[in-house]
Length: 186
Length: 385
Image 1 (cartoon, rainbow over the protein chains, first blue to last red):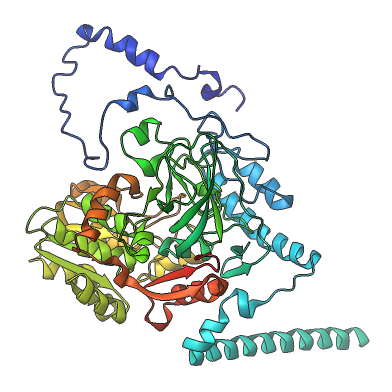
Image 2 (cartoon, one colour; image 1 turned 90 degrees about the vertical axis):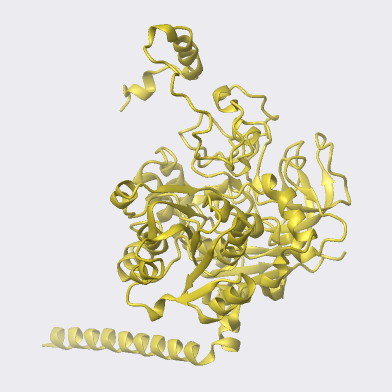
């Protein structure tokens, strides 16, 4: 929604509003009378020192140059001061990810679209491998060597089941094709 | 250089043609990896359960290494230092870091605000390549990386980058009081350490639940815990209620996360159809097995979307749920002291050592729990260069 409320509020106002309220606490009946700094379920993981109330106004490290495409969550104002440069978005999976990052982390669209992009990326990776002359090697890449060494009987059982299913599938398909051909001849 | 290369769920490659990392920011360092581990949470990536895990990425967030180069703003670390690198990437200056929540840094992960920045943990963890490689780029090098204390075994040092503080924080989050009955779900590396550290907080009983007999046996020896196989139970919750005078445990720790087993419904919806972030059976059992007013500590990793969880029971039983990624830097001094004083020797959990070249086999073995594996260690070819 173009005119949604989140597009109309001013950014970085939280502390401004809090400060304004803190200046008029005498007008708020009971303000602060039950405050208990020890009522803190985050202890001892968090050493509370009030830094939370600085919000975004803290001394930030210098900015890593943004020389590749890096997505950022729309729940923050921009990229972080440092970021990972592994595997920038590319191709169709990149376009799908670009779409996903238009939605917040609170939405199914964001996460489910990213999972879709991951699956597309696997196919993209295979095509890219072929383009560079790298053939799939499931024996090595799937660690079947370890299965052969430590789990041989179960591994052979699974392989036999798979082979049986594939053979049955091929037989069913060829039967279907030949019956189609047969009916056409009629 | 040689590095792990993710090619899709259950498919990885030991790739000799990966480019070496470069300094990208004045606070970066480049580290030559000496030891690296595979974490149980790496298996969530390997199994395709974490969104935005891109083909071509290098995993690995538990590693030690020698500093080979530093950026212009790095003042403390020096070239040649042998460091352990906490898995959290932390700026040290945001409000979260200033309050020692180093696992929740606000300046390390652009892509997800729900998650901190971690090495080699998908773009959901910030898109950094990880340490299952010969070299790694380490951002904010002056903040978390720590010189390995003299005399410390290198295998204990690498365990300090994640699993030891993570196991400790699991117990710490439980708010364990002297005499408490603590139940730990999961006898993987983190569960074993959580069980062991539960005693450090004064637990009266420590019970470990898992399905793998060899891990339960390990829990009895390493963590001095009572250990039970849920495959021998009709209903683990009834077992635990009965075992705790029909009252419930004081503290339950979920050290399993999204890759649990034990419920067909959770398996189908979580791991088969991906309608929730994996299988949350361990968390369900924890909520149902803890006493009213008890504490559930979550240290097992779940993906970010959502899970079907018993919110009604949490509210009606008055439970406190505590969870976080371990704040490694905060806990390091205490963990180093426990190890150097001989109170714990975590390297006992490393059962398998692989050259980095054999990483596909290492992942497969860890994923399928072959050859009684507990914790696999990777040694890159240039570890001793």
